[in-house]
Length: 131
Image (cartoon, rainbow, N blue to C red):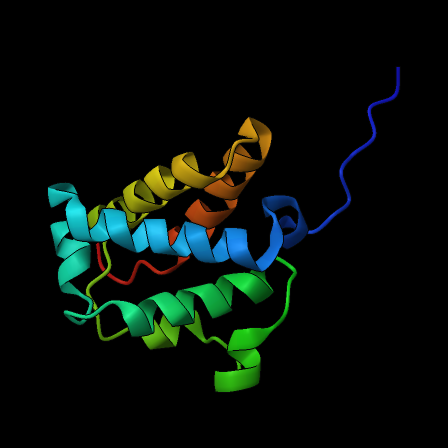
């Protein structure tokens, strides 16, 4: 039996704008709540709304949906934008912990959840700028 690969974008597979926005909201909820994420939380402003909006816009385009971040801010230049912050393995892992909880909260499809975790780990690991 031939198994057909899902060719939809990650944006479509996750459920589009509303589902992605919910994922990002849950991500920052966990960042705010988890004591294990204190270092990465302290890298953000006290009000997370701006970070939430930017992550939503970035992920929209990154997942194959509308390129909202690029339309508003230009090329993401992720490494450059994150250089002011010390991002080491611990900060990467804290960020990923928040994302794992958010994905667990919002993505029912195990295969999609695993695929997103792996892809987002690559992005988070790329942001490291400190040993």
